[in-house]
Image (cartoon, rainbow, N blue to C red; front, top):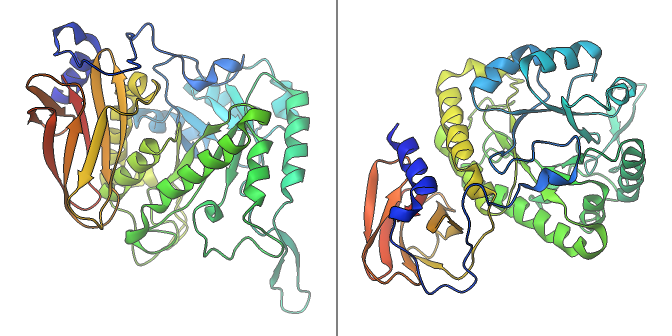
Length: 408
């Protein structure tokens, strides 16, 4: 409750705050005047409200939509062998929008607002199954789907329905240069073309459950940053693309380890701080037994994910506002643990979203330009605040800690 009150005060009672002065290019606005989120371009796309931030689950049964909704999920991505009439009816009854394949049933529902986007096949940048050895029964894998083919499919889907965004999810090769699963003929430069074949581009890398290495959480940030680079490289000719990413929250098939709630929180905020505009939780478990909605069967992780999602939704107007550069500088006292930040200015409050990028502790020293008197940094969700004296404050970071500051 205290965190919610703090966020509301930071968003609404700006007039009572200390003013942050002397900053060129100050963003002036309030909750009503905030820029819309990126989905205003599509008639039947995701909600256009600045308070909307997409938090999805991947390929889940619509019968669980209400339970996911209670956890702060507001979008389905993918439907098993769908969409079918029954799946769309169940999602409509649950009030859960979906991004799904553009099959015959889907196109019959072009005027149905429950469908908010169309999707390509998953991970076309990975090796594709081309056959099976008749003697051994072993699967035979070829190369990835050629990037130009993805662009052509995109054009066809847009011709069928220009009123919804097209979504493309790529594999771990976006972030993991050691990944050999892309197959014969794959090239790193393929990604410059893949991102042309969509309106929303995402990727998945699962450092703990997939790579079995909790020291590689920063691969999530690396992949987001690369997608943004590739998207911006093409921006002058292909228009603005939106970057999302996937997040692990189960053991998937890893019998040795699984991500902790602390890992998941760090991955989420690493992604958002580096520019992701949407999250997709991968919630399946395949080993030691198959559980499709495994997140729902893990009370500890479900509670943590619910809390993460609640905070994101509360801060959505801030997250959807522009980044502001030049206000805040940060220095980590441990050179092996960079602290990365994203700075927003909203209703004359400065928000600093920060995360320790490695599996080790450090102290961060923040300097805020333009503060002319003592102020306080409220640490959202942590029931504490830090004095900001002469524009400077310090804070401790345990391994992979996330701290979100609201400067009054």
